[in-house]
Length: 426
Ligand SMILES: Cc1ncc(COP(=O)(O)O)c(C=O)c1O
Image (spheres, rainbow, N blue to C red):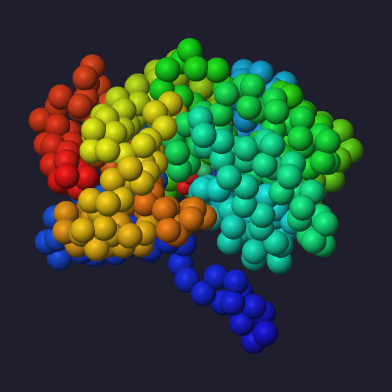
C-alpha cells in the first residue's frame, strides 16, 4: 500500500508523450484529422531481413543469460568498437529497450541526477522513481542534449551547498528534443566539469546513427572520459524498431564499470530477466551491421534530415527561433519573438500554445514544459518522423526518394503545417 502510494506520488500519470500518442490515435480513429508531431517514433516500415531474423528466432524459447547471449554481446561490442569505443563483449548488457537500462542505472548509481533542461521527458521520472533529486541545468545556446558546462559546475556546487548530492549527469547525443548534436568542444568541456566535480556520465546515444550529415562529428563522452561514462543505445530510433524493444549498454572496462554493470544486471535479473530470445536474433544481425543495414541507416538519416530541415524552415519563416536540426528527427522552436501576436489568440505559455495548435489547427506537439522547460516559454517539440505517410508503401517511398519533401503526400502535410504556422505569428 505504502509502496504504491509512493510511486503514485512520484508520477501519478502516464508519460506525457505516450499519453498524447494514445489520445491522438483515439481521436484519429474517431475521424479527427490531426497532424501528429507529438511522438518520437521513427515511422518507417520494418526492414525485411528483420522479419526473417525474428522468424528464425521464434524457435528460441529459453530464458538465456541475463546480459544477453554471447553472440549478441559480441555484436554490440563490435558496434561500439566501430564507433571509436573499443569494447569487449563482457562490457555489454542487452535489454528490452534502453528505457529499462536507463531506469536501472538510476537505481544502481548513487546520489542525485543532473539532466539537461529541456530533456527527454523520461529522465526525470526514472530518477524520481529511484528516490533521487533531479537537478535540471539549462542547455547551451548552440545545441541541446548536454547541460551548459559552466552552468553545470555552478549548479552542482550550489546544490551541494544546499545538501543535495549530484553524482550523475545524463547527456543525449544527438539530442531529443532539440534535434541537435553537441559539438566535440562542448562534449570535452562537459567531460572536464564531470572530472572536476566527480560526476558519472550516462551518455544516451540512441540517435547516434541518425546524424544528418555524415561529416558532422559525434564525440562520445566515453572517448574523453572513458572510466566514468556509461553509454546506452538501442534499435528503436535508428532502425525504427521501437515496438520490438531492443536496447543495449556499454560499461567502462575496470572495477568501477564492472560494479555498475553487475548492479544493472542484478536489477535486470529481478525485473526483466533478459532481452526476449527472438529479439536477440534480430539484435545480433542488426548490431553486426552488414552492408544492407549500413545502407538502411544512411537512407533513414537522409530522410529524417530532409524532413526535419523542412519543418525547421517552416518554424523560422513563421517567426520562431529554432536551432537548426543536425541529428535525429526533432525540432524545438521558440515562439518568443511573436509572443505579442500569440497573446491576441489567448496563447501565453507552453500549455496554451499546445492547446491552441491542437484545437485551432489540429496539430499535436509535445509542449516544452513536459520536457522540463520553463512553462512560461513558448516552446514545444515537433517530431518530424511521423510525416512520412500513413501506410508502409508511402513510408517506403519516402525512404527511397532523393527529395522526399517533394513527394506529394509529404509535401501536402508540410503545406498544412506551413499554412498553420504562417498564420500564427501574423
Ligand atoms: C532520448 C531517448 N532515450 C531513450 C529512449 C528510449 O528508447 P527505447 O526504450 O525504445 O530504447 C527514447 C525514446 O523515446 C529517447 O528519445
